Amino acid sequence: MFQKIKSISNNIYNHPVTTKIRKGIKKIGQEVNNLRLIMRSFFNDAGKTLAKMGISANLMSLIGFVIGIFTINFLAMEMYATAILCIILNRVCDALDGAIARNSQVTDFGVFLDATLDYIFYAGVIFGFALANPAENAVAAAFLLLAFTASACAMLAYAVVAYKTKSSQEIKLGMSPFYLGGLAQGFETLIVLLAMCVLPYWFMPLAIILGVLSFIKALSIMITAYYSFVISRRKQ
Image 1 (tube, rainbow, N blue to C red):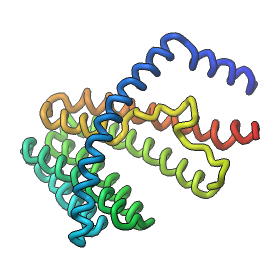
Image 2 (cartoon, rainbow, N blue to C red):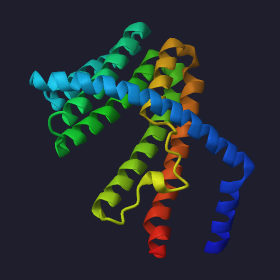
Image 3 (tube, rainbow, N blue to C red):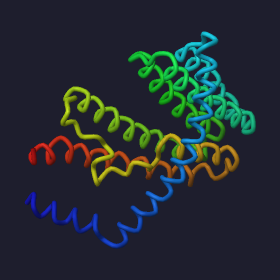
Image 4 (cartoon, rainbow, N blue to C red):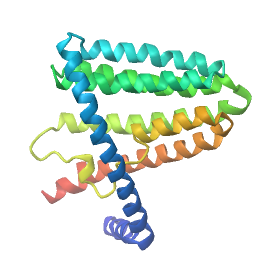
């Protein structure tokens, strides 16, 4: 039974259509990665300056979170331009807190705080769209929140198990052929959220698309977890 499932998985993975999709995703991922490297260099220099000024990474995380939470209010009032500004400032602060930490001290609590506030912020933005137009947006917003929860829980659960079994033999997500690394990541999610603000009447289709991608990512992580924690260990 296992060999049959493995054979089917290999056939799907090596299918021309699947291969083309993977190459397309990889190419997009490379372009996005190049942009990230440029931005990372800029924010690293800024973070170094802020660290010398005595501004902590945790403080920057909290400042960004407070700004981000105002997004809910502006979305509910359908002040989309102001909401875009808050979203961008939140993401700038998110980049700066990491840069400050790298140039001062990375702490476990800082990593926890950053991840927690990010998840709350993203959920808050979706909630804001639901408040803006409950009749049309509520169901799509609920679907997207469900998809976000599925993706986040899968990722966090994987991280917990990987942390518990941390060793020289630990297998990373990116080493699995089943993990769709660049799918529905933070940068891609940010682009969609900004598009929702620019085109608020397109919220429903955009939310459904992003939700589906998030579910696919959650599924890829679950399959990767089985590959990493079961199949690969059998080979050792």
